[in-house]
Image (cartoon, rainbow, N blue to C red):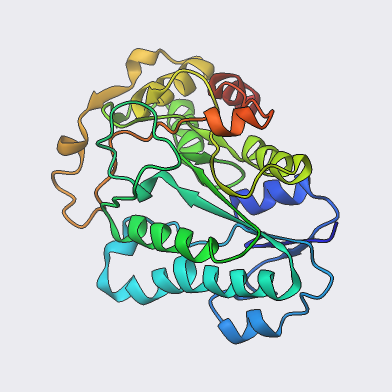
Length: 278
């Protein structure tokens, strides 16, 4: 199987390179997916799988009208270009999406078939990108949450604060599960190797959902600090002086029953966190 990873230098892209060691890894310098002509001109012949880990992920910056075109180019138009490229050679497109396509007002875990209702520019772009990905005859849309991998992320920030003796205040009313890129990449590999039916799959780490503050407290405990050193606040209070910030969904818990039915059981996020910090 010949696999191409686009967006190969990001957190997920690096994990995908380890999960697919024989894949062709393309960063932006090798293929700018926002350039439709460059995507069309790439030598896709013989490619069986396209893994799209390229995206605009700066959620707050996406709200700036000056960035709207760039957000759409990366999260919508580029996905359409990749879907057309996949169809042209009969390849499978794997596109990574986000729980930000939902408003977070749903009670309980969110299933794949809930109608999108994004609250932000980023969320709308990811919802529209899902539509573009689904234009490929053979596609997997993989929705995930709270990504943690190699590079800057929430867990690394909290670990750094803990190590420096700083006690942060963290929101405690946004609920979800961290997703470690090693597990996200493993789930994607499973979908492909198992021949799971094409379509949309939720894919996060498993375990009991938690708030951002609870995740921070778990990081602090792992670093030898007291969990009580993490202060707690509401999303409304935290963003009261940040009017340009994107609106966040409060419920980010995705239902994992569909991917589990294919034979893949995601690791508990606390186990993955211990490995990551270890």
